[in-house]
Image 1 (cartoon, one colour):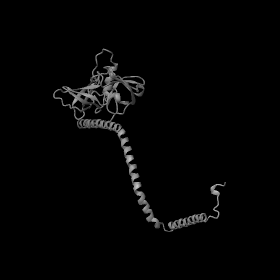
Image 2: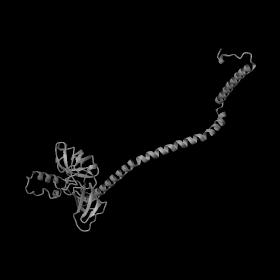
Image 3: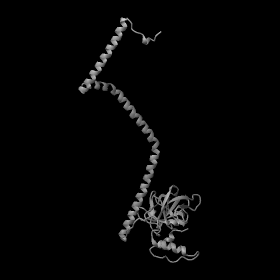
Image 4: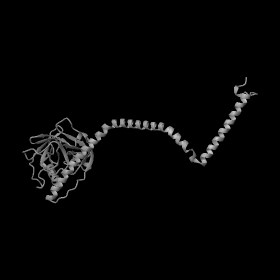
Length: 315
């Protein structure tokens, strides 16, 4: 038996009429399509109403799709913003803190320059660092607070040179090797640093307590002018540090000064800059102290302009 598709219509009139009608409709459709194509090429604007009607029909569906797409993007952006908010807030707080420190340092430098230029007509420049190094370690449990840096005598580092981070003072070089050095941190119990309040000339000493904080002791006793939140900077006395570098922020008041929190925390510092000693007289005093035999009485200060190197303990 042959497949149904191979059967012939035979003499069935109904089958013949159906086949003829199919051919006729196909030909009419082809002619209509050809006519419409020719009309669209000859008069493109003739089908504008039809296109407009079709657009009106599908516009609600497209609008709903666009709203859903924008809503989903907004939800995803909100979720991503929620997870990134903590990191962004931490970065913003760090930037604000650094900006406040830089502002306090700028005010201190401005006040120092105004005072010195008004009295002596001096102009000062920023010291060029001797070397940059990584802070490779620091003591955290004993009363002595030391740190170690990856730069030494081969890099030009000498004992007494200030060590600074991008925030402020870390300490000063205590001993040097060929490619490393030991740093006396500000919080060491043997560290004493002349400081002043950044906004004026309230003079004090920053003494290390061995517990990560500094004791700010005023030179002129009486009514304590310090306030919580005041920034203290280096005064330049003694000749080791250049004036106007951030040191600490007052966190608590005491009868003779206050307790300061370090601006440059060694535990949060990766890289430091080693600067030269600010005043040549301090260099001469340091060299004389190194040449003096143990137990010998100290000699007279080389120059009267820098009588204060003894304010900071070398060991």
